[in-house]
Amino acid sequence: MVLLDLPSIGSQVVRKAPASYTKIVVKGMTRAEMILKVVMAPHEPPVVFVDNYIKLLADCSTDTFQKILDMKGLKRSEQSSMLDLFRQRLPAPPSGVENTGSLSLSAPTPEQESSRIRKLEKLIKKRL
Image (cartoon, rainbow, N blue to C red):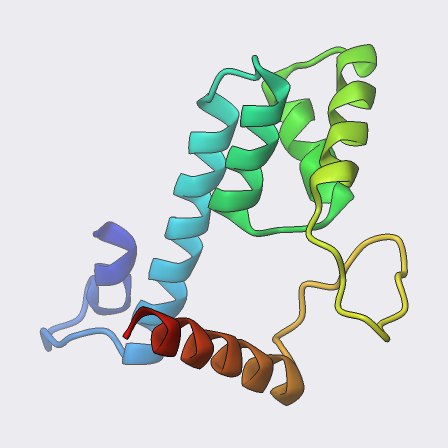
C-alpha cells in the first residue's frame, strides 16, 4: 500500500496514483510474492517443487530457476539434480521454433496470442 501511495506522499493534493503506475506496482509485488512462496516451499519431493515453480512463476528460464535454488540455500549437488529435473519438466516449445537454451521473457507474439485464444475457444467448445 505504501508503494501505491508513494506518488502522492508529501503532496498537498490527494489523488490516486496513475493507472499505469498502479499496474506496474501490483505486477511487481505479485511476482515478488510468488518468488517468496517458491523459496519458502519445501524442496522435497523435487518433482512437486519444480511443478510448483513452473505453476507459480511461469518462468522457463534456467537462470531464474538457478537463482531461486541459490536463494533456498541448496548445495550445488542438489541444485544440479533439480536443474536436470526442471529441464525435463519444461513445456515443449512450439514446433518450428528454434530452441536457444533459455526461453526469452518477452511479451508473446501475435501468433502466440492467437494460438492461445484458439486453444481456449476449443476448450470452451468441448465443455459446452
